[in-house]
Image (tube, rainbow, N blue to C red; front, side):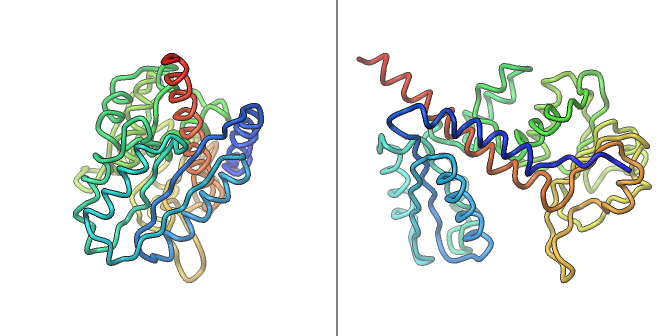
Length: 291
């Protein structure tokens, strides 16, 4: 039976360390979250981020805009937050309502790179695409990929020289986690819907990361015995939440595996909180140099 990689446990360690740092400063880090509309899933995510801020001791500012919000109102709200010195990090909850979905790229570009705690702005993407090894830890890394790396480090999973296979090529998870693994000297292969003989590719993986949004897609026949399997998927079925990996079969083949829920999910918010601390320290240091 595989070792269960416990994201709840590791994320709590991250948050505890941030709480200790925050207790030592007089002016607390501030995170603003902008929510447009009333998407139930988005509301849950925003509330979880607000809860994490409260737990650590951050200042949390939630701005809820109606679904009828227009482009100038949304971008104007972001611009005000860019100029608000009490706010160190800005996050706009995606997806936006259908009427504003075309603005997602413009929203990302509007957020100041210094406050882009999601790590989506092209300037921040460029920085982590060119970083290597420990240097990457000083950047705003996308929260889910950063959380995956934190889990691998916490469980002492060897990365250098290992074959890492990424199933999925999204800008949010697939591409960035591949670059972070490459930065730590893994040999990285990306697989996707056009990959020929998918199982032959995934069975080469010492580290298999699955982020495709298909419930229970990867079973034991995809996995090399002894591989470490990271399941990024979250799929809501009538039976409950399941990942992209068939946990019951793969856990009998892998050496270590993340569960769903309780694996990668908790790490995403923990790494967001870590990015807020980075933003706070960077901005505080810059203000001090001006004096």
